Image (cartoon, rainbow, N blue to C red; front, side, top):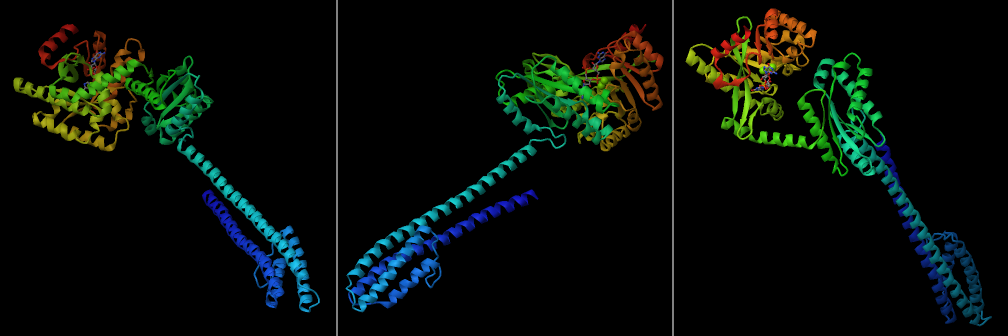
Length: 605
Ligand code: C2E
Ligand code: MG
Ligand code: MG
């Protein structure tokens, strides 16, 4: 609607300018004719008098001059002359007309022979001078009019250009504002933040700033559990509170789904103050779930010469990403060590494929003991990376990295191959089955080829499928799709054992346990870690074990480190134990079942 109005205004203004231009042209032509005919009056009168004196009277010319003069005075007549309204011109014309009348009378007298032609000649000279003056006045008034019209025309033109520029600028401003604003929360978006932050840093060169990037942990899970409407409400509440707190010469923005940034003036306990603000916001708006919501924060202290805003944002983002990789509710400041870590990770990423070919990834095995008889029923395959000149690198250092870049699947399938090779050799040597559980990342499980590749590898080694236990961490089941559940079910139907790893480390939904095709539940080490300090931990372990048994699942408890753990787990009927008490993960070549069982028995006695 506004655009329609603006179009109408512009068109009208341009039309007015064009009309003024046309009027100007017509007027100019009319004025030129007046100048021209004023000249004719001057010249023709001279000619008439000369001919009269020479004895060649011309009455038709007298009538013609009469007509022209009347037409010039009134604007009416056969010569189509416009009346020139200029006062001076009209006065001069009136004066000339009087002389003309005298000339006409004198002509009659000369013709009747009553007077000589001297006086007529004198009058014609006077007429010429006055006519000259009249032509000059006609020219002057025409010029003045022309100048005036050009002035009006230029003013209209300038006015329309000015109006166009003003409206255009306002539109650009509105457009820029909408491009720079986050639709959902109404605060700045990424582009808006970049532009505003750059100008803020420029305007306040003496202020020292920090850039903080934070997000909500497991926001996707919150969305799916509590609904997208609640998710949006949460984002808006957070946006409102940061915007009203960090204003003036500070800035805030939402730069991605649940990613926020704040450009805040340096000061003590910045991160703690932000955490308090976020907690207060949650407490006010989301009383029922506020305790479950946590935030991960990355921060960067801007040096005096901080470079461009993109570099600053990259550094805060680097800190934030690393904080996220470390877990939940973490705060991390950017420093050069972080850069070292990233360089190290970069090197790992580059080396990974070659390392697979070189056999640098090794399978370690950690036994799982049946707590009833302390026999080893299974071992967990855990990867290690032996980097020449660097030593052995543990999975925590590279798995999150490879999960981020998607190459973890290659490692998972490599370890599966090694596990299959081990089982094959065991079968060939001892004639009995040995069971190994292999960890599969969420990233691998979600790959299209995952299921066919698992089948292809196990079948290549001709391994009975029940020898392979597929460990999938609990967090992989958050928001899992029906298609993936169906594929896991297919694997189970193929005879593979499916186990949920690290149960209790994230948001466990007991309801989910019932729906998923899980045969083994691995309790997270954290339960036993809290065993000594938290009275509740014992109850939780025994309740979960009981629940799992009613759902027909076996229970493995991770992190068994003490004799009292073994005693307790045995007492509550937990099926298997895994942990340093029995054995650390050991290289596959050193893994000897008989020795391990013997030493476990000795330990337990
Ligand atoms: P996880 O699957 O839960 O494996 C158990 C981890 O706990 C292992 O760490 C093991 O060494 C450690 N552990 C076992 N008993 C004890 C104990 O009594 N006390 C303590 N403090 N720790 C114990 P590891 O080998 O460093 O592996 C860490 C994680 O890396 C694994 O946790 C698993 O999630 C992942 N991972 C290991 N290998 C692979 C793999 O081949 N593929 C994938 N996707 N993930 C793997
Ligand atoms: Mg595991
Ligand atoms: Mg585990």
